[in-house]
Length: 512
DNA sequence: GCAGACCTTCGTGCAC
DNA sequence: GTGCACGAGGGTCTGC
Image 1 (tube, rainbow, N blue to C red):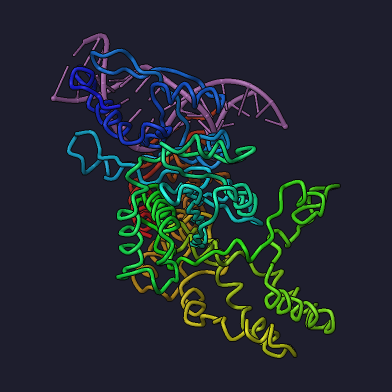
Image 2: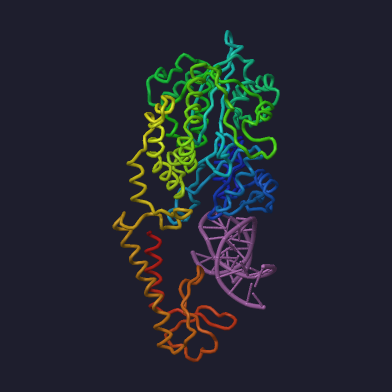
């Protein structure tokens, strides 16, 4: 709902900025970055406070009424965000887009950088490593197509993107087969969705009707894939499907602010390729997990229908049954590999952590072994796979030469880049290390100079480097020591030289 | 105009 | 090991 100028009047600049951004995301909880905190206001704050169990307080708002507020430190988002999303909410994450130092005393610029929803999330805490997380779009036909639908589904983390068309009576089958976490639908057609589903085990997100216009959807797909038509993907003839696919891709782009370069193709999905299984059947056949311990994994969620493909799969299975060594070795190799598809998605969207990059290197490093095993197999069913895969040696080399083997959890912690990769970085590290060596020697030198055997040099985040002397030796403290802190049985001091070296070390580490 | 207080939660340092 | 105090970084208000 648009805020009138009357409503905006009297508010502080910060709250005017907040409501302006909130206007663009009325259906999402807006997490508003304020320094080291994510803060929520107004009705959002009441919801956040209730769901996260955190204090609901208030923030002043100029001449307008105080605004309800609830917040948490930015580093706690990984634990709080999943609770909000699992409650079925959408969360818009608003970050500061400039440094406070550059804002000339004004409120810093802010903007939403990501909208997290049940069907669109890159956060590990919200994803099941064993399952795809699909966003689906359904477009209901009209006129002569009134009994048909376009159906598209996309996994934001891997870029897997499919489209199909079906009779309206097959919605239930499609939903059960794909099992999306979220379905987007034309807001005028929500009732039809409900009419054709026995239950709705996903979040329904309504979109404006223009999102489901053919021309808009088709153009969205062409612009994304940078093509003149969709013929190359084999989906050009699916008018209803194209609308659903365009709507799904548009929604994904909106939530990720266009950062979805890893969605590089769309494929035609044929429901006839697979047998639809309802949740009860999957459970009873223990295809996904065992009934007893909920832990055993299954792989036959989408059984094939085509005889040729079934035969091809059986050939591969037979090869493994006949060749125990191949089976054991390949199982061992694959067991060491992570989820490359999802990791590649993280890299493409700029979300990869240092650990993710190393997790990419390890499976790629082992891929030649896998390719050799597949190539040596005595069946076309496996050697075809070998021909399709590349070990990407250039990527492995680059990661190997640039990154350390045991990276920090966050880039901000430093120590990610390998020595020798960057001359400038090596120089800064040398300055920092030499400074630390100087500080380390200082303890011995000062202990001898002052004749205080218990003298210690330490560091903490509050006071930086300091020299600690117990009260027993207080009378021996030299005149050039500057007192900084008093403890129960000791005093802490600094010297001009120590402060100068601290500045050198910290400046170098900041640049690193 | 300036300094200090305030406001959510959480990690850290310190005292005991 | 436990409990307390503080600071993280924004923006705003209050008091001098």
